[in-house]
Length: 118
Ligand SMILES: Nc1ncnc2c1ncn2[C@@H]1O[C@H](COP(=O)(O)OP(=O)(O)O)[C@@H](O)[C@H]1O
Ligand SMILES: [Mg+2]
Image (spheres, rainbow, N blue to C red):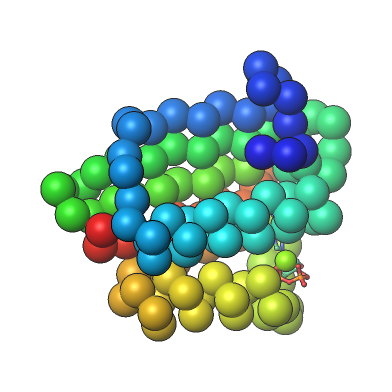
């Protein structure tokens, strides 16, 4: 992530090594880019105490679950507007790839789960 040092204790990244096809790889990359830029603008990466946990796992041989969890940033309120970033994530994950994108607007930090058939 361009926002963090490699050994930054503010980020924890965990998951098995998986080779993705082009379409899901692009969708995941785009979504993580949007989530990271939102975290920098509004969320955990906008304050020095914020943290991000990124995890992924295979729920089955063809089903990938990616979980992004923010904590320690400014108190979160559910958004009143959907910006371009949210619309793009929904388009690629839900409409193009028939996956799922779930946000939880917890006060302690945003979390987002991406489910994709791979
Ligand atoms: N990590 C986050 N923490 C707190 N609020 C967030 C976070 N990500 C998004 N939001 C809220 O959701 C809104 C929509 O985000 P997005 O669709 O990416 O639009 P934009 O980045 O252009 O504002 C943001 O304006 C902000 O209010
Ligand atoms: Mg955005």
